Length: 399
Image (cartoon, rainbow, N blue to C red; front, side, top):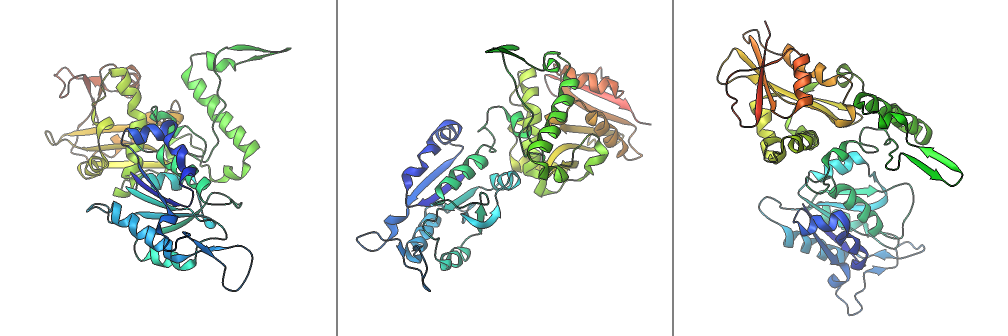
């Protein structure tokens, strides 16, 4: 992703060289360019502001430097595949910046940010920009800042960390606050018992039990309780999910591809680790590969609280029209342990045409958890050699 930022304080954006974003820049995942608005002024004092027409306190940023700066940004970054950026202008009168918006913006190849100061930017600049690129005014919250730089730092971090490869543990992207309308559960680490002065504070016993289903249930309840206590306004929109029927499965469309890609990375990173195979398709596919998969397979998706949390696909086997092939069975990690995966298998089986007599699926030969789930669903290992090395093929009679 390319990001351009226009500001009168370029040094304010120095933190973009730190931590995960700094590493993403060095690794080529983020291409960030910061432009000094004053270099586009035409007078020797590099003036970028003037008094407002109609009177009033403060100063207004003048149109000429902004028009020149934005035109330069487009000229410098334009390519055949990226003719113009999506311009985002931080301002208290804009649309709220949410996790859902961050995720949508993370799917765009080129973003530009205009950091206003003083009383704002001359309104004609928005008209100039809108004739050349999409423009969105975005509000970080219901308060006023001295300028847009702080908001840009927050937005670039929220957007950048959603790009594949920026955050090392992709599972964390689907277990965080606001990803499904709920706040995150409390977390603990060693020691299991901590002597805090005169008090002794222990980790909740369920986290030490090794019972993953019980842990998942406890965490879900903690998220509900914490959200009710701290942000009760979020609960009506949280769409708390415990069964597949609550998700309203529908056939995927190309616009779902970005979310499908994020979910499959989150679901397959553990599989890659278990099987010591990092070149498996779900981990190396591009967004174009995902879109192509929507054509080759019938793919179903289900959302909860505005994010995609479950997906699966199936097709009639190209090699045998009597076989119904299931694949890409995905349930967001924070919803694991509730039986949704088994319900998803049953749903996909129910979509098989009458001409299909058996179902087929495969998984990594070291994926013991998957194999247990599939065995409980009635699948048995095939005796033939698998199509792909390091995998196990399973089959089940449908009718």
